[in-house]
Length: 333
Ligand SMILES: Cc1cc2nc3c(=O)[nH]c(=O)nc-3n(C[C@H](O)[C@H](O)[C@H](O)COP(=O)(O)OP(=O)(O)OC[C@H]3O[C@@H](n4cnc5c(N)ncnc54)[C@H](O)[C@@H]3O)c2cc1C
Image (cartoon, protein in one colour):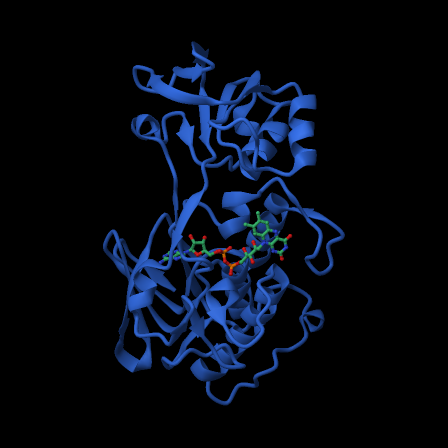
């Protein structure tokens, strides 16, 4: 694979670095194919990393229970020997035929990925975090929409805005690490799991309900927030504010790529092929009769797609890969 500033060339372009996309890149690598993995989010992991990194997942094959963050870390480590070219924080906006029957995936900020085949693993589409106007100037300077690493908040005063599962889960996870954790929620009741809400109170989190953030202050980075609650205005010191207000998901540009769609999903056949030649779709973005939207289902689809891609790009090769147990190392011989 070669990469320059604006153009990346790979055997397979994977759109979406959620679990299905990461595993598709692994399976492609296992077949000796290079991959470029594009994601609009700044880190891999899709919904898992963005929405529930600290939750335990109980139904992924081979794991009795695994935290979201750990599963993503494992997927990234598993594909690492095949050296995928990550293009994170980049939105795939167009899909155009390229020479030799391949495709060029255009990126929003300029540049493109040229590839022999494309695997679309775009999940629910592009997620844009909900926010509050006063937080906007401090995004990246104290304000974030999720918590990639808990440890980054050690000894900080953290304010979490929101009342759903993410807000409550992060407050529980950060309570033993941060100097202080305050949850600001505009309603009196939380939308999160009842048991989690109890845990949040038990963890010593300061909870402000019927409350809203009315102002953010700080010369460069966020230093203080003003919170209106119960007719009273509080000023809280803060070095990190997590706006856990949810995401608006939108299929965005993919809807205009000439793919056959049904209920905002891409229609695929049993090989995960779309109606466009050498374009496959896997994971939550794809649809077929009675599909079950689970991580483990996406893994199977990724393996199916990548092995069919291998046959298309290397005519004469077998559809079934060799057994991974036949290899001494992860890398292809
Ligand atoms: C709270 C919650 C709990 C869950 N618990 C479980 C569970 O216990 N077990 C289970 O099996 N499933 C669970 N799920 C569902 C599971 O997370 C999804 O099925 C899974 O994440 C789908 O994986 P994916 O790779 O298909 O897509 P996603 O994880 O959605 O990843 C898609 C990626 O594509 C990117 N993308 C989209 N469009 C573009 C574009 N145009 N350009 C660039 N990038 C783009 C997105 O940014 C995203 O990162 C849960 C979901 C939620 C919300």
